[in-house]
Structure formats: C-alpha cells, structure tokens
Image (cartoon, rainbow, N blue to C red):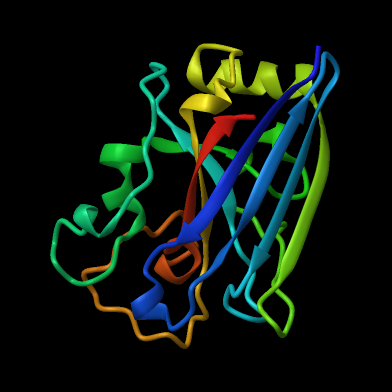
Length: 185
C-alpha cells in the first residue's frame, strides 16, 4: 500500500533575511522505501540548506512556527524558539537520511537563483530502525510532523540573541528560513 504526504513550505524570517523562501515537499512511502522530493525557490543563493522534519517523540502533532514564537522579541524566530510548537529535529534530508546524522555538510546547496531540488530514495526499514533507536517508536507519523528549511549566508548580520548553535555549526546554518506542515495526501 502506497501512502503519500505533502507539505506546502512557506517563508519564515523572510523580512529579516531578504527573501521569501518557499516550495513543496512530497513523501511517498511503500513497504520498502520512502521517496522524498523537495523543491525550493527563493532560498538564499549559493548557501547549503539544512532540511529536516521536526516533531514530538510522544506523537503530539507538531505545528509550524510563526512570528508568535519570537519569544525574545529580536525579530527572528530561531531554532530553539520553534521547539515549543514544532518539537525537535528528527530526520535530516541530506545525503543519507536513514543514518539520522543531523550535523554534517551533506545537504543541498541552492544555485545562483536560490533554487534547489532534492530527491532521495530511503530504505524504509533502515530509517524506521534508526528512528526507533532515537525516539522509541518506528512510526514516522509524517502527518504529525513539520518540515523546516534552514540556512543563511555567514555574511548576514544576526543579533547575538539568535540562538541555535549545533556542535561546530553556528546560527547561520540553523536559522529557519521556511516551514511547512506535512499532511496526508
């Protein structure tokens, strides 16, 4: 049985970063694999964009962050500020999603026009095993997740109040630029 999920990805922090990143994501799952397709436009050009689905390990439905989550009033919705409504980072959409290794340099890079197209076939059983090891359940529950696109150039001046450093990656890498609610098609 084939299950399909989609997300309309909308801009976040657009006024502060100078572009309104947007796009679509589709997830097609059969008994063997998950096909991921993400098509993004108006992202920041020539920048690597981390992308993941976020959610709550207990299965609570995740929602997209909005300006209402700017808890410190600095004008940016940073990664920690998204957690109250979106949960934690779960599965990365990089070179090998099933390894669930979030901090790395294997994410898509936008072209000079701010476009990128990501497509990946993922072994479903391998992903479910890794997901269960990390979150206690092998049920991905995509219809309870949101997708985030991250990343701005390191030349963009961010206030010191913007948080979200992950290991050796600073807030320029983790700043959300777009978000979408994943729904069952």
